Image 1: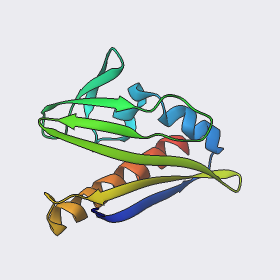
Image 2: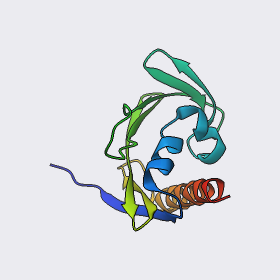
Image 3: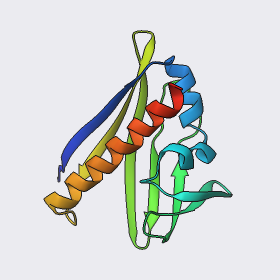
Image 4: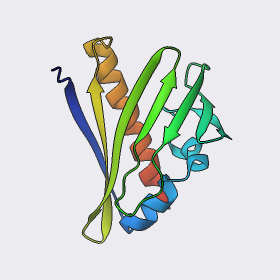
Length: 132
């Protein structure tokens, strides 16, 4: 069994958690706040395609809409599959958005740190968009 190093990256948002989930669960909205995931999202059957930050074509499969605040998604890029666990939970009258980042064997400590910074930037952008 292998267990990777992980980091949970969070942001608190001053909006009802259901409103945060409703906005963040729509793949077309990702390009407004998730620059680290990609841009030019287009639906392709059950999956979506997008251009990653380096301009490469990726495929993304999002979790189905649900009442639990689960925003998990799988990114397929070249020969690599990355599973991302994301949750929106109630935090008082607001919301907490949590992203679990895993350090896979192909990631250096520098890449892991850079990915964590990119995820934090994206979550901060989500906060800014929703608190306007």
